[in-house]
Length: 485
Image (spheres, one colour):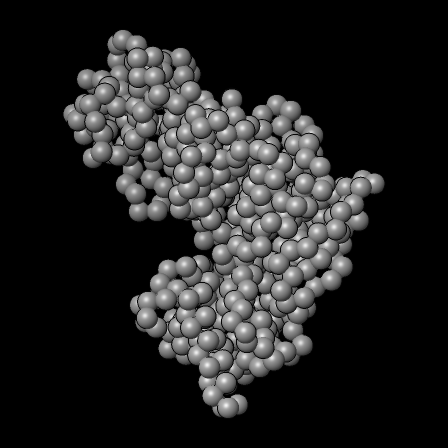
């Protein structure tokens, strides 16, 4: 449910949905809206959403219930058998919900610049880097990210994969009220496909990459890419877009962008580039170049994919007039991100990284970074029970078998063919897999715990991945000390 800030003014549905087919008499001034008839309060506008395929019922089936519970109007994309309150038949009720939600809070994106970060991978990391850079530049940014949110006054947990349109509107309104200079938002393909951004004007769009992710949601690679490209529909006239020049699919967007575009990448064809100078298990040093200006910076997060995220954030910051030295200071200030090649150091003689990678491209990038650092073996703990399509799950198994010297997986992921692979160890559950990896590792090896979870596990004392790994490493070190004594 969403309420307007100025209940005495409201929003005219006849003006907002001027193209809608209308039934019923009288003008409707909306001051709140709702999509769930069970939560509806008298005076709400009920927006009937279609079946999204995720277990939520088609809202059109409950339009009569909404009217009987006090809805002052029904907004729908299919005719509904409601005759005692006005109805507005629109082409897409998801779009209508977004537009109404933004209008009810005064269209904050018309006042506060909104910067969207989208793409297959690296969104939350790029957003965290961008927030740090803008903070270093003296900006006060609101944030909506899967890593965490900030509305200008208080911090809260991450938004999840796809916040609702009313939630986006409410958060933007809070940022505007708190005096934020910018709003930084993470935009998933699910949010785009379900028109959660409708009514939002994006000042800038940062595209990290466009691969073949989320096929379980979009059914095909091309369908996913088409959905991602629709984010451009929300770009304000004259808004700037940054693209990854190393990603061929992203560069195909150039023909559809009529405003300013900046490109970044590790290749020479990009306008803003970077070159990795040194890599260690606990940091990497690279030089970022924009035109004739260059700056060296270090990051305690390793891997070329992180350099690509730094480039994306730096390019967007440059587009907003922030100088290179400030950008470098902002990037260096981000020394750790949960589950993003997060190093767990308890004095052991080999690096251990927690990484949230649970898609083929993300896992490939993490294991490539591990391979570059390893003098010995790459040991990978694969994520827990599969959450993807069978094809994606098969690809994950193929990648870990090809790029790791030893894969340790829990029973839910194992199948007969997988278990017969020579360098795969199958154990009962994830906690045991982590324990096995830590016990087997030797100096020179690199351990990657992929698909890293922040939720406590029911066994092993209820620890999450990070807590359990630390416990195991400390226990291993204590054992080594006793043996040496």
